[in-house]
Image 1 (cartoon, helix red, strand yellow):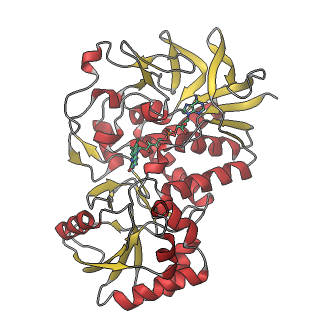
Image 2: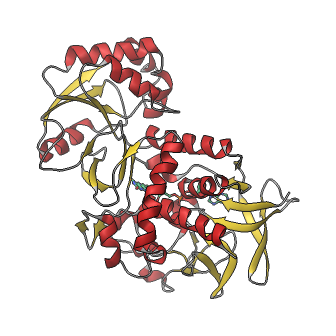
Image 3: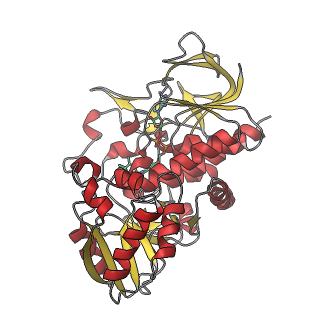
Length: 415
Ligand SMILES: Cc1cc2nc3c(=O)[nH]c(=O)nc-3n(C[C@H](O)[C@H](O)[C@H](O)COP(=O)(O)OP(=O)(O)OC[C@H]3O[C@@H](n4cnc5c(N)ncnc54)[C@H](O)[C@@H]3O)c2cc1C
């Protein structure tokens, strides 16, 4: 069957684009080969965190200072303002409650206790609007006995450096102690699987209510809610102080939950999600892509009017490199990268790395270029795009979400 749109890659950008199209009645298939980088997500989305090494207060206002090659400049600051509002709607329609504004970054807290600028944060996670007006004076940092994914001492130090008074309080319950018999269960994702029943949550709440002392707020690792936030809400209803979650080291329960909710919503809108399949090649007819072949459907190429490349960066194999070149492995479209391999990396893990900014070359409508010419019905979105740097600029999830919706608009508006 011929689809309206085939999207290659089922991470954050692929799903946001798929939802945006399916919501308007388009028949969409997503080919999704593996896990997405949302497994690293700490419960926040960044639009633009840093320009020239300085924290950005107003992401929308700072777009004009970005180079023209940045994906936001291709979309345009005015359109980004309205697309940013639609992103919030897309999340709430999917059952994901996030707060924040594209005009004013707030601060999220990393698992290491570092404050970073953020655009949207899950409403059950710790969010600081103003570092000079903290949301609580004294925090009870609840540390799960035997738990692996939280460097508690570093987190507490970071929070104290920000001005919080922090009591580190170790706790356990019968359920958690039983899980500790197998050390591999002491990960965020396993705890989220087991801490679900009313009784298990009551036992956690009892510990918090006994141990939190005179803290204004209880803080604990984000280990609740694999499929939605109802476990957290039930726990909060049993704890007699405000409760907030803080990001854990990956894999992230919050990231997995958001992906589950987006996938569910996409399917509810009638979208087809081909889990565990990989696009391997495409067939072109002049300046159009006519079909994509996948590993599992080798004899049945996927045909569509439009295609979207949402395969992520090097970590997701959307981009690859050998000793001589950086390339896009599925469709062989053009990549913006230094030709000289000596320039790809710099010595030192903390040094800015040129390859973070490499990616697929596109025109002003996000159409992929092949041998310098735009492919009329193939757009690239998300972290496979060139011209941005999630690590240096804190723009990763913003680029994924905003280009996804901008590309969906281009597809719908095309003549
Ligand atoms: C380590 C790390 C930490 C990060 N931390 C943060 C953070 O804290 N905050 C933040 O805002 N952003 C963060 N980011 C950036 C953010 O996660 C990404 O910008 C965003 O999630 C990327 O979404 P995406 O859909 O573009 O790509 P991805 O999430 O990479 O998804 C691409 C998908 O395409 C699939 N795929 C690849 N090739 C094929 C193929 N041939 N056929 C079918 N499917 C294919 C992949 O398996 C993957 O599922 C982080 C990124 C990384 C790598």
